Length: 195
Image (cartoon, rainbow, N blue to C red; front, side, top):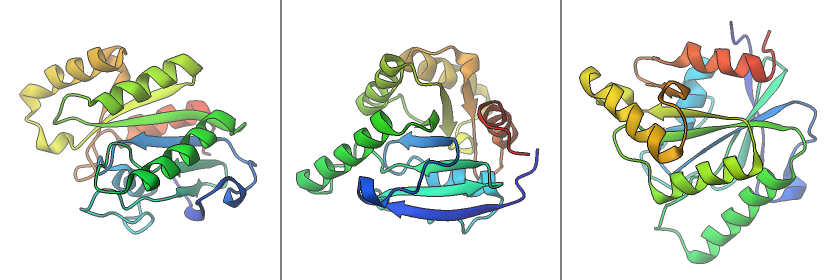
C-alpha cells in the first residue's frame, strides 16, 4: 500500500472550526510526548507534515491530515501533561471529548502508548473509554527502537494486560527505524481503503 498524498487539512480549537466530515476519520490519542506527530510523519513519508517537539503539551488543538484524499487522521492534544493551567486542561478535555462523542465519521482510534513504560492511569482511562463506547481501536506502542529486542515481548504483554487487549493486538512501532509502519497501514486499509 502506498501513501501517494498526505496533507495538512485544518486545525480546530472549537467545534465550529472542524472541517466537514466528508471522509472517515481515525483519531490519534495518547499522552503528551508519546510520538503522535512522529507517527503521522512516518506514515506519510514526510518528516515535515506534522510538527514534532521535545516539549510536551505543544498540540493544543485538533489537527486534521488528509491521506490519499480518502482518510483523515486527527491528532488530538495529549493527555496527562501537568505543566499547563487547569483551565487549559479543561478546555482541551471538552474539545477532545466533544469530538470523540459527537463526530459521526469517526471510524476508529489509534491509541498510542510508550513501549518503554507501563501504561499510565490516563492510558488506562482512554482504553476503558474506547471499550465503553465500543469504538474500533488499534494500540500502537511507540519508541520501540529504545527497547531491547529481548524485552519487547514482555513489554507488549504488560501493555496488553493494562489496556485489556490481546498482546497480538499491540503493534510495535519506531519512527526512527519505521518498524510497524506497514502493519499500521494494513490496519488503516481495513477501516478505509487508502488506494
